[in-house]
Length: 107
Image 1: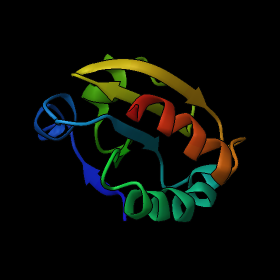
Image 2: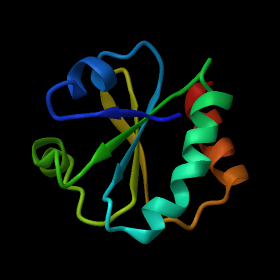
Image 3: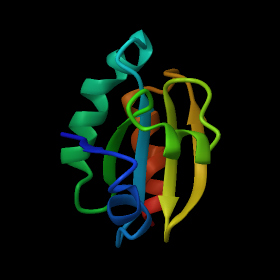
């Protein structure tokens, strides 16, 4: 299951992580976010050895949301060595596409 993160623990859990981290910027009112949730939860388990997957509720965590200029949900940002390295906006990716995308960053 994707781990929830907040403004308070974002630096520790994402920026200081020892492997790539996918941050799912989501909102409870966002239907596409809710639709992607089960896939991301499954990938959090399947890819746990190579990629960490976390969820950040944009409504409850405005500081990080603003810092990374997230305006649409869902927004998926991959962080590597504390830096954002890639981003996808929207829920248009299939499970297979997400796996391929994340494996590129885990290599």
